[in-house]
Image (cartoon, rainbow, N blue to C red):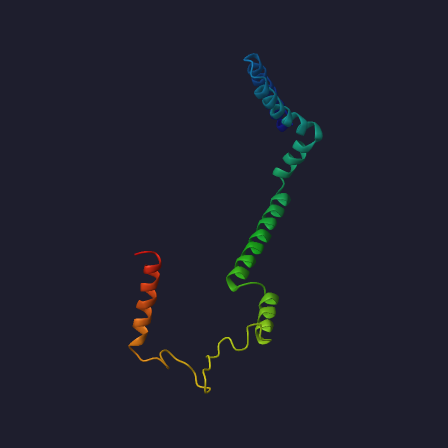
Length: 148
């Protein structure tokens, strides 16, 4: 009963403010204020305010809201753990199966084999001093190209 009275008073005050605003030739703002002022009366007339008042003072309703909050926290926590682990268990199993099948090129991690079947390491065919000279000659060619 008191909720309906408060909503009616708020609507009446809002319509008064809308009338003053319209008197000042601000019709668009007055129409917007009037629209907001009519919402509380509309809620009273539909019965939503009575339902809300009964719900607000009901311990069962508050327990239900508490359970909804607990469920939301559980959902958020499990999602955070999934993100930290890198996906769901199903996604991790699928990724492991793809890795076992050889999703990566089979020879991608094998060393390159040169002529004669031996692995080429750093400077295996070049003398130790020629590596630095090649670097500088490439740099000199770039500088000459740009006119420096």
